[in-house]
Amino acid sequence: MQNTIFALLAVGAGACIALQASANGKFRQNLGDNPLFAAAFSICGTIVTALVAMLILRPPVPSMAVLRDTPWWNWIGGPLGALIVLAGASLTRELGAALFIALVVGGQLLCSLALDHFALMGLEAQPLTPGRALGAALVVAGVLCVKYL
Image: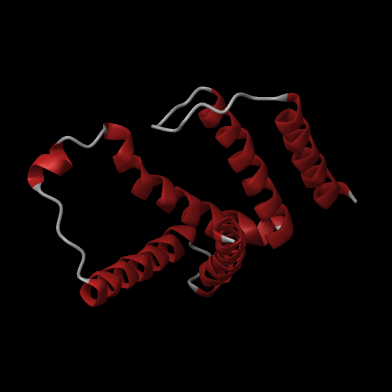
């Protein structure tokens, strides 16, 4: 049951990514066709949302020692998130929401397979099996269908 709930939450997150990309693409257009401002204002919304959640939930503040001992690659999430927002603002109008998200999902899956296979970024090793490779190939085929059919 717990895995089903997690899977539904992940599907909801995927829907949010599609909605976010579409909103940021239109935001870009409304701001004089400037994807940088659309991304910056969108990220401000992210910061406000995180701050409000912290004010409501009051999580404990990590110590300086914990922050210092955090691996370098833990800090790239914010800049990578900003690049994702900027990509959505820049590319959704040109590609359409479906193709943009199909390409994002394809990129996510291929990168995730490498992260799992090589146990990178603190993940447990999950070898690339023929079934996983077939699943990735089907996703790539899906991207091609969205693009050309």
